Amino acid sequence: MGSKELKDRKDLDELVEVVLPGAVEPEELRFRHRDIPVPGAGQIVVRVEATGVSFAEQQMRRGRYYDQPPFPFVPGYDLVGTVLTAGSGVAPDLVGRRVAALVKVGGWASHVVLDAADAVEVPAGIGAAEAETLVVNGITAWQMLHRKARVRAGGTILVHGANGGVGTVLVQLARAAGLRVIGTASARHHDALRELGVTPVDYRAEDVPARVRELAPGGVDAVFDHLGGRSVLDSWRLLAPGGTLVSYGSATTRDDTGSKQWPVLKILGRVWLWNALPNGRHAYFFNVWAGRALNKDRFRARLRADLTEVFRALERGEVTAHVAARLPLSEVARAMRLAESGTVAGKVVLIPDAQRNLPEA
Image (cartoon, rainbow, N blue to C red):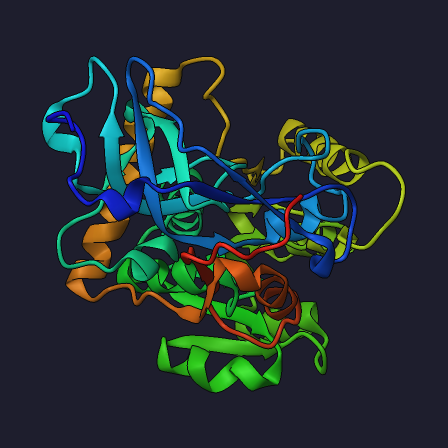
């Protein structure tokens, strides 16, 4: 075994991955077994320790994610794991280290091949599941708050879905930055939000715009809206002069039929129009992948810097990793059902297991 390989042979058995064969129910996801690939130049093979169920996979299984690949494919937006092997041109001491990565697809597997440049080291002392809750959710929250909204300390923001994967991280980062936070969630999550210093609003029982106007008569300095649809219009109208709307999804259209691009294109059209008006407010449609195609090196540097800041916030206690549940990869259907139920706070994490009797694709 070469100097760039871990010495534990049990890690080199086989690769197991989840396959999404089409627009199916969670129970129709399949498993595929194949040999663990050999990394090419500049690549690494990561033994996955934790991956997660995000809203993206919920949309993908319905064929509703904006730019998902054609079926069949392996879902899994992000992952945390240990570098198992490395190809030429990769620093040998990276082998054996725990790293995190955004992949968009492919993370629901026991092993994943990555470009080494896309891996971000996880600080010692942070567990795999805890780190996993902060990869796509943490990057999204950090960049929306600090690179887009840029609200000064003392300002007030509104976070829709404050109990969700992104929302939970976002409200904590905002509180650490000295912001007042109003957060929408169902009543079952209000006590937990109050413990985080958030003023909760029940989106099921209250008129959200009216209640937010009561809490912030002059408007809010920023709104973070993952809902899309009608909510984007209400969010724009709740902004104070100079305020910023950051839209980053279309959750309300998850179960719709028809074009999966149209809900996003509609938001983009509104954002363009609002920014063209001389109203002193700003709007963005945030996509964590924006800019990668134009300047991959800059994208990677920003990703590494921002995710490192999120991990530091975790180490300082400013952010808590909210693991809603840890389930083995073999129970991915159960994990997806749980994530889609809307009954949990934080992120459902998948822990790849060593089972070898899983149904084949």
